[in-house]
Length: 195
Image 1 (spheres, rainbow, N blue to C red):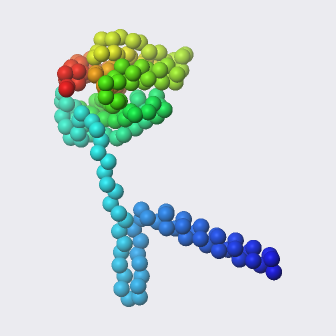
Image 2: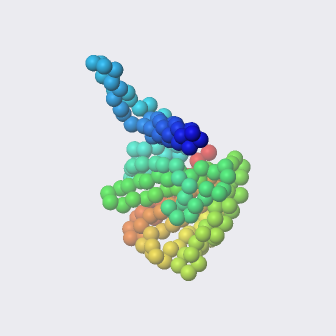
Image 3: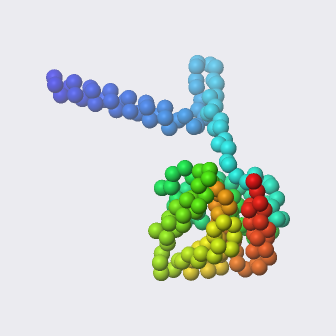
């Protein structure tokens, strides 16, 4: 009799877990409810888009480049994870002109903490780079602080990160077209002048 009770409890728990799993995993799908001869289609709730804090919006044109897409991420240059830094938000924006893409990473940190945000991000780079094939080249040429990230395995791509006030901007672009750097310098000039 004791084994029967235990088996019954196990069956009840399995049914309960199955029902919970069906409920939770079925929320984002359309499914049909059948109430006799009347059939109604249940629609999943429409997700509410999260506003992205960015200088740019999709379809903006910046120095001849069109903003194609944006997303919130936890990495800079799709390589350096900055999720351990609190109170920052990273937005990845992809721009394109002809077949030439530019990716801009906006790092938004706490107000009046731009230099600390820059230092924190730079320390993440130092901790995560491969010392054999990757280096940082502090240039200070752009904005308040700046460095190039050099990757020997990706030598045809330039990676530049600079600070302007409270925010950081990372540019990833092809080195093949010298005109691209000229466009980026104009974008940087605009970003350093923004309020």
